[in-house]
Amino acid sequence: MTVFTRVAGVVIATTHKELQIMRRYPVAIAVLLGWSLLLPAAYVAQAVGFSGSDPAALGAFADRAGTRAVTAYLYLGWAVYLWVSLMLWGPGLSLRDEQLRGSFEALFMTPAPRASLLVGGAPAQLVPAMLIFGVVAAMLRFAFGIPLGWLALIGGLAVIAASIPVLLALGALFAVAVLRFRDAEALVSISRGAVGVLCGVTYPIAVLPGWLRPISNALPPTQIIALLRTAVLHPSSLSGQLGRLWLVLGMAVLCGAVALWLFGRALARSRTTGRLGQF
Amino acid sequence: MRVEVETAVGLIPPVPDAAAAIDLVGLTKVFRKARRAEGTTVTAIEDISLSVRPGEVFGLLGPNGAGKSTTIRIIATLLAPSAGSVRVCGIDALRHPRQARQRIGTVLGGERSVYWKLTGRQNLEYFAALYGLPRRIARERITAVLNRFGLRDAADDYVERYSTGMRQRLVIARALLHEPVVLLLDEPTLGLDPRAAQTLHECIRQLRDSGHAVVLTTHYLEEADALSDRLAIVDHGRLVVQGTAAELKRGLGAVQTMRLRLRATHPDAVDATRDELRQRGTIASTEAADDAIDLVLRSASVDDLVPWAIAVAARHDVTVLKVDVEPVSLRDVFLAVTGRELDR
Image (cartoon, helix red, strand yellow):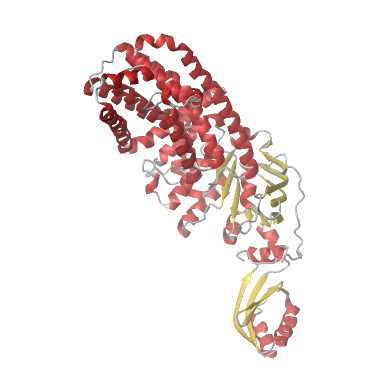
C-alpha cells in the first residue's frame, strides 16, 4: 500500500464518517441553505434602498465591479463566503472538537498518515457547499430571472473544482493554528472578519484603500470570488482569467506545503510537551 | 515520607528481553514548566525499566500523578521520552512509531474517546479504516469484537445511548480491531460500577489468555492484585518495586497485618504498648487519628494475635477501640515501599 492510497483511504473514511454525522442533523444544512438565500437578499435590498435603479449609481457600480448585475454579484459573493467558511474553519473546528471530546489522541494512536488527519473531514463539506451553489443558481435563474447558460454553469463548476485544493490547504493551515493556540473561536472571528472585509464578498475591492488592495489580492478567497463572478456573469471572458487560475493553484501548493510543515512541527512539539490531547 | 524497603524484592535490572512484547529501559520524561512557574522542569518519570511478555498482564500501580499515564503515553508513541528506549515487539518505537502503533492497542481516557453521534459499528468501521484494514477483513473483525464484548445487539445503536460500561467495552473493542500484540489500558475501570468493572476484568483475563501482552494502570489495589501476573509500584515517577503479587507480599516477611486503634490516658502508655507488640512483628506505621492512635503491626506469625494484642494493651492501661486482622496485601506492600497509604 503506497502513502497515497493510505492517505486516500483515511480521507475517504473520515469524509464518510463526517457525512454520517451530517446526515443525522439535516436541520443544520437547511439553516445553511436558508442563510445562503436570505443573507444576500438583505444586501440586495440594501443596495436598492441606497440607490434604487438609478443608471448613474449602476454605472458607478459597474465601473468598479465590472458588472451591472448587482443581485448576482452579491449572491455569488455570499455563496463563496459560505463555502470558504465551511472549508476553512470546518476542519479546524472539527479537530478542536476532537480535542474537547477526548477522541483526538485516539486518532493519533493509529498508524494513519498524519497529513490525512489534517485534511480530516473537509471534503465532506463539499456536499453542503454544492447544495449552496445549486440553491443560489436556482434562485438567480428562477427568482431573479438572471440567465445562466450551460457555459456559465460549466465555468462555475470548473472554478469551484479548481479552488478546492487551495481551500483544503487553507483549512489545513487554520487547523494547525487551532491546534497551536487552542482557541478556535478567536481564530474563526479573525478569519471571518478578514474574508468579509478584504475579499470583495459584498463590494468590489476597488473601493478599498490603495494600501489594502495588494493584501486583498493576495488572499485566495478574493481570487476565487472574482473567478466565479467572471465564470457565471461573463463566461466568454473566463479564458482571459487563466493567470488568476494559476495563481490560485500556486497558492494551493504553497499553503499546503506550509501547512504540512507547520503540522509536523506542531506534532513534534506536542509529543515533547504532552499537549496533544489537552484542551 | 519515603522509607527504606525491608524486602528481598528489589528492582529487577533492565535486561532487554528478546521475547518481550514491551521493553522499556531507563525511561525518563522531564517536562519544562510554564515560563512564569517556579523552577524550570518537572520530572514525570525517571529511569523506568520493565519488560512485558505476550500472554501476561502487567499492572502499573500508583497514586494519581505517579507517572503511570506518562509511561503508557510514551509506549503509545503519543509522548517522546527525554531519555531511555522503548521497544514494542522488538521494534524501536521512538524511531519507527508507525510500525509500533500497528502492534499496539491503547485505551486512554475511557469512554469519551468514541464518537457519540455514530453507532458502535460505525465507530469501529472508521477506526478499522484508520488502521488500514481491508473492508472484508474489517467486517469480520468488527463482528468478532462486537460479539466478544457483548455489543452485538447494540451495534447499530448510537453510542450516546450506551451505558458507561458499554462505551468502555466499545473502546476496548476498538483497540483490538487490528489484533495488536500489546494492549495498553490506562485506568480502564475508572467510573465503572462494580458489575461493569467485573465484566471488564473478565475481558482482560480473556485477552491475556489469548496471548495479548496487557499493561494495566490502576490505583485500585484490589484490581491490580486480582488481574496482574506481575506488577510494579510507581511512586513519584520512579518504579519502586516490581514482581508478582505473591513475590512482593513475601518480600515483606510477614503473613498477616493487624490494624489497631488505641486510646491511652498518657502517651507513654502507647509507647510501652508498641514496644511490647514488636515482640511478635514489626510496626509498619503509627498515626494519630482524632483522639486515638492508629497502629499497623505486621507479623510473620500464623497464630491468632488478637487476644494477645488486647492483653498487651490492657497491661499498659490502653483501650483497644478497634482491631482488624487480614492477610498481607498489596496495600501493605505499597505502605512498605512508599511509606504511605495509596489513597493519601
